[in-house]
Image 1 (spheres, rainbow, N blue to C red):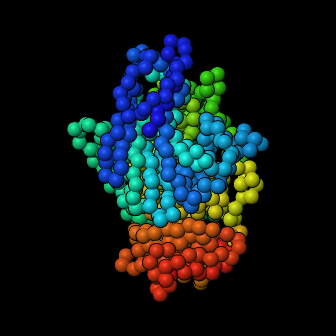
Image 2: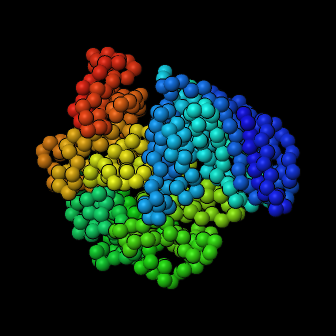
Image 3: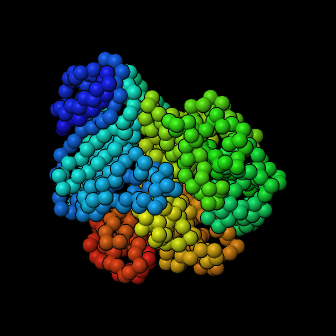
Length: 591
């Protein structure tokens, strides 16, 4: 394992490469790399101790890979919405095209990672793996993002993996954990179980400290959310009418959530707008009287220019090095550009505590969906890394929410591990299968049904380990969408098989008999045990248990007929390796 370190010391740049597993000293800094055995592999740490202030530019190690021709690389995208899936070695990651960069670069890692745009070169964040043709994994995972995000870069032609810390520009005066990751090998479930056991321990190598208590996960949940049918046009009447439909039919959902559109402006979270004349407390009370948990959407670390926060508290805005407010993106549903808030401003943090107190204690909501969280760490400065800011943000919201439920969204996943109850693990679902323009522009966070499904399959391992996965909504209704019935059923079935919280924005009153029958097949909604997943040639085969029953789900994710392959072990008389012909976008659930 080869180590690399570069930094500024007394105004001069120094670079070193060295054998990583050894203590050594270099001009201005001592380096201690250690390798410790853990079940199924080893843990590597690199600790830096500067003699006086240094400025880091690179901390990394290179690990040789033994790649077979059919091995696949899992790439975990930067945040919730970023495409995350297994890649073949001859593929390449899409690069955001220049016309889209001014409006879209803030949503991903485009602003601080240079995409090579070449086949066989991949990069991902927090964790990654190589899947061999036999199905076993060679796994690499960060145990903490507190010192900075951990980057995994694959160079398949050179058969090398570079693991590095996102820390360029960090001013360092004290001890710094440059790297802390595990390398594991084995069966899929064994590897992920071991990884999250080590993540949860939170104990440094060689320490005798006890592990902190683990926050228990809630039960799997179904429910309704206003966004994917009503968007910002949601009103109090819309919410109460839909609630009455679910109550009348005695459908066993667990959550009713009001999404974006209730607030006066983005950034103003202490009052409701005129579309909710009874106030949000009355809405929460009505939901809870129906025997359902009440949820509310917030985007606590952004605001738009038309908000009261923008005009009254400009000192709360996150500023760049030139003292200008930091744009966090563009949303045509609001007033165009929106801006990030400064988490380290004391007045702003006090304000956020009041927001959480109002939502939970005064209004009575049980859950908050916290969106656009990435914005808090867009400009970390030179005293903290992006990963440190994001970790401290997630610790803050967890503390502020207390024992209430959090659904995280638009968040880099590593800092969210163990700090949210539910978490979005893919992009927004669209009312169409794909957005061809945004795909052509190389936008990996695009609103797209197939983009969402790809990450639902790719990040399935997190469900029940890091949090309960939110694959976003399913859509069964005919009105106000353009998905075919086959596309809707494929989305529906994959969400149910792989998700931990599964929501819809449909009203049951609009369902045909067939649509209602499909919807009712959800109940009772319980935890699934996924036994195997096989993805190849645009098809997906999922074997899972629900209760005491076993199921096989075959899905064609393309617009052409495909043969789905039954995975390991025969099922319902179908032998392993058997090919089942599927029409475009067709899925079949057998059990």
